[in-house]
Image (cartoon, rainbow, N blue to C red; front, top):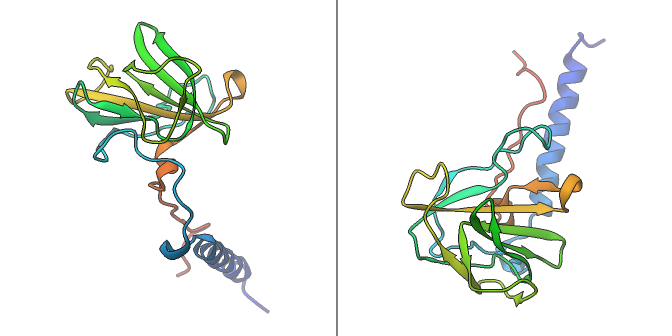
Length: 179
């Protein structure tokens, strides 16, 4: 007969190992990886100065995107192919949003648009120019880059760095380490 807790500990270890193997086996190798659908909206790949912080409830505070360090006047490119959903001002700041074929919407702010609503854009195509004035930016200028699936009450905000494969999956233990 097993002492209490050993069965649970062994089950958790087996579950963690299974999850690790599932992720490892489902990740394509570089040799047969599909081409990336998305790329960074700034070149060279910028530094993240404020990370993604999803709120627990949609109405609570959080940071629904990432802020990327840059300089005013730099070209901002569409992260993926799609149709310009919005190019204009929101709360006095210039914003561009692109609707992608997979249902994602990416947003870029503060960006003076060089595209118009309804335009089709390809990945890497310039969509505007970064301007200074993003609140809370610790550098000369920051691009706030957001990603979401859906709109309004149904919007699910996503970490846009995940579009680049830049979000690491970290497995954590399900319970305390055995003695």
